[in-house]
Amino acid sequence: MRFRDFAEFCESIEGISSTIELTERIADFIRKIEDEGDLYNTILFIMGKVYPSWDERELGVGVGLLYEALENVSGKKKDKIEDMVRELGDLGLVSEKLITERSMLTLESEELTIRLVREILDDIASLTGEGSRKRKILLLTGLYGQTSPVEAKYITRLIMNEMRLGVGEGIVRDAIARAYFVDEEVVERAYMITNDLGKVAVTAKNYGKEGLEKMKIQIGIPVRMMLAQVAESFDEAIENGNIAVEWKFDGSRVQIHWGNNTLRIYSRRLENVTNALPEIVEDVKRSVREGVILDGEVIAIRDGKPMPFQQVLRRFRRKHEISKMMEKIPLQLLVFDILYADEEVIDKPLKERRRILREYVTESERIKISEQIITDEKDRVERIFNEAINAGHEGVMLKNPNSPYVPGKRGKHWLKLKSIMDTLDLVVVGGEWGEGKRSHLISSYELACIDNTTGNLLRVGKVATGFTDEDLEELTELFKQIIVYREGKIVEFLPKHIFEVAYQEIQKSPKYESGFALRFPRFIRLRDDKDIREADTIKRLEELYELQAKV
Ligand code: AMP
Image (cartoon, rainbow, N blue to C red; front, side, top):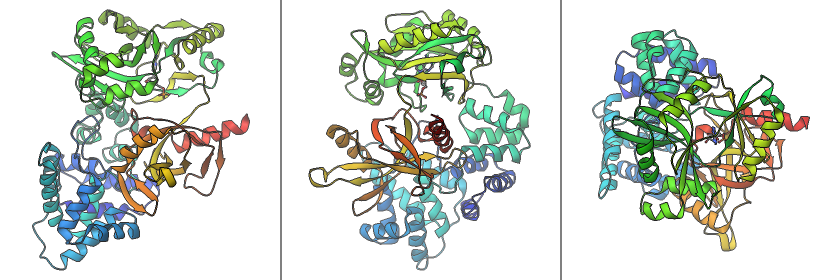
């Protein structure tokens, strides 16, 4: 398949805002793709992904590198290109323009195929270490050298992971269902288990519904974690009788795969964090029977008290001098669920899974099975809630003892009850450099919620308070690397990070695309354990707004 066909298709759907129409168009397009590899790549590329989220490879191409390749291929200087970005607002459009101007001078070269683009991107991803930057620029320059303008536009957007098509996972999932005549739920389940819509599409094409239903979780391939909804009250939680109550630990989620002599730990974003947690690895190997996938929370404990959640994340991010950090930030693992025990067990009820869990896990100094009490008494729940808060944790989790483990689902089977007014997790999309003694710091950050069907980011305002100077130093360092363009003091970022923010009130506002604005937003913390797709949705903002009106 020619890459041009893909790029032209993207262009043809770019202006469409109707979700139904987008779904239909994509379904029609993918149904015609014969080759498995082409189908796989098309599915990922259309969402602006080069690799599925479980795959550890990454391109390692930042904005700076892209600029250099474009400089090479167009002969234009960087500041000229930056001017164009300011004018057109998107590096994709700029690439298109640069290639249009260039192609007037050169002959059309050999035609690009989807497969070739994949190969070049894989080559780029495989380069590391000394000299890799130069080689990446060479490969990219070569790639742009072969593109037509429309291809350049989407290559750039693909590399930046932002296709600007309004096509999120929801739409692609529904398009797969439609293209191969299977139910959306069946596609969804297969996706949550494999974490790879490309693979799901190929299976749907080859084996239909039955093939999808047979897809099972496997040790070594991370599964989307089951999530919790906010419980508005104790009453809501116990209205259906017995519930399983556990502390809600203030740490970071992990999924542990232990089998075939290999142990891997994945973070909530499904990144492999095994190397950062050697003491947990050792202990699990010693006290857990092989052949399992466990779900749990890693917390940092000092003198019996939990340390702030940021400390846990520091451990997760750490690549060097890990043993020093092990002393400074001692970790404990609390296991609360099991997904695989020599076979898939996610469809068994929670009660049964907990029984299996106890069979496979022997507790140790560092590994505990979270305590769980099954009750239908409100007082009892309240007591456990207070105990959790007093012990320095966040609140309680209230689980339905008869529920299956539903990967990737934020449903009523798990409810969370926290002590503080709920905060929002929002994507950081832009910022502004400070003034005076803060002029070297990005001191205000623009935030957006997400529309979960389209994947579009909708702005809700800026946060400029709640930061310490140290926070700002660290954040500036982090965000400087993902500036897409700059206009005066204002900068735009690639959407990669989430802030948890508190606020006093959600207001209606025509100023931002979301239709909402936050009153007195305050920075709480960087939620680097969350992927941007896990940001709070526009639907959640609407709910909170309604709720607030009632109160
Ligand atoms: P939140 O991050 O606020 O959506 O809350 C859900 C998170 O709470 C999960 O992803 C876990 O990381 C964490 N958590 C802490 N304790 C538990 C527990 N006992 N059961 C399930 N999740 C827990």
